[in-house]
Each structure stands twice: as structure tokens, then as C-alpha cells.
Image (cartoon, rainbow, N blue to C red; front, side, top):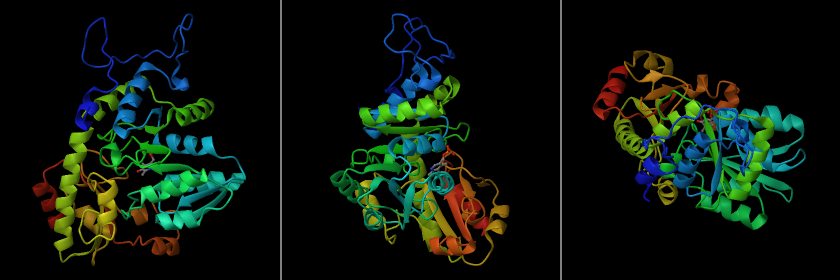
Length: 372
Ligand SMILES: *Cc1c(COP(=O)(O)O)cnc(C)c1O
């Protein structure tokens, strides 16, 4: 099956009683177990509604198996804890989602995990590894500056050294980037973003080989964090249009980035789709398209004034929905950093991060133009 067909059909359960084309929502948390091979239970991560969604995402990522969670952070934290013990060394890209960064600094490091934060490149991650390194954690494209890391380079090095690799693939979605095929062990998503796509549910997923998914599921049974049947259904419904949404959103983003790049009011545009981006060639080599996230720096006006004037592009924290969403990273995702840390990462007070939706680009550009 091709991607669009997988989105619609993979994993679907046809109810034999009615022949309905949609998977029914099985609300039970208690299931009979006598005479059955598996004991189904929501926190065993093996109910029919969970399996349906997992099968679809696993097919889209080209992996073998997966575990579905109640949030992206549940998927990320559980997966990290699956592969390391206190005392182990891990190499973590510093430019990652704020919640993942805080999980490392506020949970792992105080518990005695030995972590090295690296700058944003495959070379930097590789250089940070020692004899004791058990895990590498990367994210690409990154939040909020859309830097791109060479996935093949990281995975080839890690495989040769027996180091487990985890990637946060949220920004690209399975439509644009499939790191499992490029040799990454565990691919993570905040399904709250593109997979859900309508800003109305919270979930996360980890996909990998069957052996690694079994390990993650075992840890997940201990710490919990499962998703309920109703939200599994919402997610299944959303995934059917994932390819259409992401393709349109990416095309819109390319058009807006090009427009911003030509505008006198904008100092910088960060988008790997622009031929002038230092990441353009690398992104092209490992992504199907450049995605729908972009950032830009205003020349003079404060970010908050600009956002106040926007008519329908909404200042919000999340991303990946059908509606365009904007935020100023310095006062949201990166607020917890010191000014010095923000300067070092290149996150200025005039930086805005735009999650491009499926609206018409004429309207989106008109809204940005009048706000400028
Ligand atoms: C939102 C997000 C997360 C965390 O996901 P939640 O569903 O909010 O727990 C992780 N990584 C990235 C890149 C995100 O955007």
C-alpha cells in the first residue's frame, strides 16, 4: 500500500456484526480472559482500539510494532527509562522539545543518570559519546529553529557501537520522515500535534522493532500512561487524513516562508525548504518534504505586538493542527531558560514560531501582512 491508502485502511477493524466501515469504540476496561491468548486491559496497552491506531502508525513509519500513550511526554519518558539505568551515560541534543529537556535535567540527572547535552549536529552527538554511552536522543527538525540533524550519520555510528537511538519525529510526522528506515531504533511522536491534527486530543506513540516495543510496553505497564478508547477512535479518524493535511500544510508553509523571506519587515526566516537554508540539502536527503513548521524574526516590532494584531492566526502553545498557530518561543517553550541560554541557542525576543494550517495561503499571508 502507498502512504495515503495506509492512512485510510491500515489497522481498521471491520465489525462482523454490522459490517460498518469504521472501527467501533470498545469502551470496556474489563475483558474476559479464560480461553484467550492475551489478557486485554487498557494499561497493558493491548486493547483493540489501541491496536488499531498502533498498526496504522507502525505501517506509516515502516516499523514493526509500537506502544500508544496518553501524551507525547509519556511516550518519551517511558521509552528513555526502558533503555537506561542510573549511572549510564546518554548523549542528548540540547535543542529539543522543552518538556523532554526538563525530563532530562529535572528527573534523569538528579537520579544519577550521566547526561551530556550536545549542540545540534550528528558530529556533536557522536563526539559526546563515550565507552559508557547507552543511549542517544535526537530531534529533527528542531523546535523552534528548524535545524536538521543527519539521521543516517547518527544511526550508523550508534549501530556500530551498540548504542540505542531515540528520535522525536513530531515535527516531520510519519508522512515526511521515517527514521526507522534510516536505522533509528525508536521513533517517538507527540500525537497531540500532527497525528491528532485538530487540537482536540492528547496522545503519544513509540514505534520500533517488535523486540524493543515489547521492552517499552513492559516498562509502560509499570508506569501507566495509556490512552482511552474514545481518544483512540478520534486519533484513528484523524490519521485517515494525515497525508492530505501534512501535504497541504507543507505546501502552504513553503509559500509563506518564501513570502516572509522577501519581506523587508523580517530579519530572518528559518525553514529548511528555502534553498538558502544551510539545512536544505540535508533535509532533502532524509525528508519527503520540508514540513509545516517555520520560524521568523521580526526586524523591529516586539513579538507580542505583532501577535496582538493577528486576526485569525491564534497565539497558542501547541502546533500541528488544521488551524495556523503562532507563538513566541522566548516567552513560552523557552521561558524557563536564562537570557544567556536563550542567546546561546539563538532564540531572540523577536522570534516567532508558526505552525502552518490548511487555510488558504492568500488569507494567511494577508493576516501576516496587516499585522506587520
Ligand atoms: C508537544 C511536543 C512533545 C510533548 O508532547 P505532549 O503530547 O504535549 O506530551 C514532544 N515533542 C515535541 C517536538 C512536541 O512538539
